[in-house]
Length: 190
Image 1: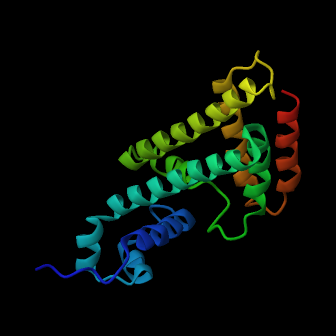
Image 2: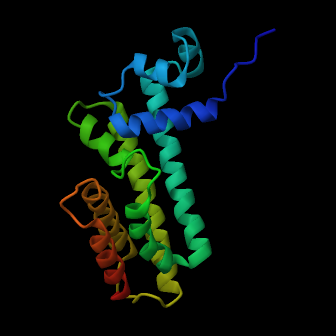
């Protein structure tokens, strides 16, 4: 009868997400993962198969959490207010490994290499954009934004603004809080 692992796989995926998010794919070695996750090489391979497989799981967790958090915020505040609040929440978040988006960091790092994980990051970013488009469409139906706006185009612009904001929040020469307020104010003008 096989032994039950002495670790919680979901916890390890969350820990790996934070390691990869902070250091990127190339900046995280297998030895780093084994040390940080407190796994021996055999246990690591039994649990995840490879660094890339674990990275894919970590990205999936990051993306799922992002969509779930956005939808929960919309449930609480309404679609437009959630979209307006998100930029401020990104800037104010103090427990994140880094403010920059893990998906965009992955895409930028691995696209030039033709790495499969870049394609997965792109797919997750599309899912997040779809979430934003859904919220813009719901805001339109509620009469909060004009019907002349294309929700898909608004979502693409909003995602682009958020990705830029997240990078700006990493810099000490940029007032990211002001930019977050500007993004929210722009939504009020729709």
